[in-house]
Length: 448
Image (tube, rainbow, N blue to C red):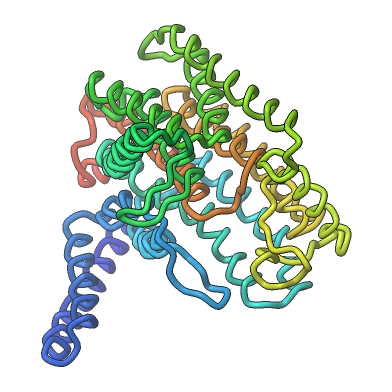
């Protein structure tokens, strides 16, 4: 208890000092440098919100996690989503409720193991993009887990997932409208969005597949009305279909099958959704079969087969540790493509050692999430499985489409820990946990 009070008091003190310092800085900078003053004002707002709600910044970062606009260069090519995640991570690290639960600790250890496994390629292949991507992968997995945990463990899962879903619904609307415009013009091709920022069809498909699965799962602790969840699910699903991202369709289909067939303690799910899943998978198989039967050696199916072979050629240059992360952007070989398969990407980048770490990370996480309470573990397991399946047919380590599923996993794990503390409070006092002060009172009762 004393440690908790000391931590809370220190956070308030540091926040107060920083608030005064930033306020003074803004006053000095406003007359001379508008953009810098604006940035300082944003920091001031973040600190002020944190004093009111310790996990305010991780919560407010949720909608920004789907902004794929690229910034930077020279080996530091990151997205605005990465910067939002980076900023939210530090607030989550210092202000999120502690301690981490058992599943959360296991996931973080698995993430650390993968980072150790890929550290060998950073040492063996010293160049800027390699080092940057090593930290980027850590942020996309471990950092996203911590941000999600902060939101879920603070009891803000409903707000957090709603803020994530809202921009996804906006993207879905734009995708469907663009698809209708293309059809009216006689164009049956995939949808690429240019506004409000450039979005590739595979990004659209993967991110909206995550949103569709979250809406369909609709765990009780999210508290969404049934009509809202179903409308969001069908809108996002139609947008995934319009994007023509085949890996997203397959991943969503597998995720829906898992959520539908696994027993839910809170509701019975209709199996009719499986009637829509089967045609979706058949459509993907039909398209791939048609491409393979063509004489066009440059269609996407044949191109992938060529890239698979070339990725193996790159791996043979250093079978143990690979040629380095993001080797395709650094001129490390004669090839300049990112392998469209998760295992081949890791194998060529980090070698056999890195691939072992990658497989341990995912299959270890699957075991951890499957053992959780299905109320929380089913969504976490299915969203991570969806990403793993998507990565079998397209680029894997690609910013948003990695961080978002791990963020949702962390949020589910945090929500389970929050619910467990509520149940403990009911057992001890007969009431739920309305605020952190009640948490302290529960701990005092335990110590008596």
